[in-house]
Amino acid sequence: MRQVLVSQCGCTMQCTLTKSDKEIILSPSGWLNDSIISAAQKLMLQHFPLMSGLQPPTLQHAWGFDVHRGDFVQIFHVHNSHWSVVSNIGCEDGIVNYYDSMYPSVSSTTMQLIASLVFSPASELEVRIMDVGQQSNGSDCGILAIAFAFDICCGKDPCSIRFDHKSIRHHLARCLEECKFTCFPILGERNSSSIKHIQKTELHCSCRLPEEVGIDQMAECDACKVWYHQHCMDIPPEVFNNPDVPWKCKSCSTE
Image (cartoon, rainbow, N blue to C red; front, side, top):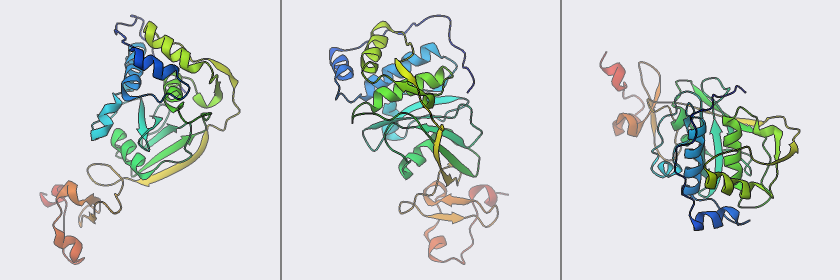
């Protein structure tokens, strides 16, 4: 994994860690909220200004993430309340690494979200589920997601690291209070294969997203043979009701 340049100008962000935020971070059962994750990512951007991604997780609620150009790292939530990390650093186009401290696979909804982040022209999206250390309780996902993201930004492989779960919460609180990130405390190295397994999904349409089974219909353009979502191309209903009805996408119909 290649090293990303670090800013030498120092941190200029004014960190504001409320009493409530600090209590959440330090509590063994505290689940990190959007504001804490956002503050951590903003601080990472101060250290790694050339890194793409690290957008506020609140944008996810309305599918408002910008397309990530270049090398990126992004923390986001899945299954409504669980934090994970995705990055394309060291990957070819259409391939991303996914770091999750609990779940062994990626849901179709998460596949949709990742595809929207990368907006790849590739024919399929390949998500590599990475073999990172797992959380020891039901609430450390946000802490570990931040630790994973920071190590990725530093050019390290989170899969090879065994974090000290007893100290990582205090470490995060101190980093946010001091407006300066340092590596999270570890207990040693892990024997990891790096990749647990790989999930793939085909990408279609001008939106470069997978098929939304049961949500939106798709039709194949008679000219370019690309499949398009009905809502993206405003495809007439008769195209789906009668397979003999010809149809061309907007690009091909103007040629």
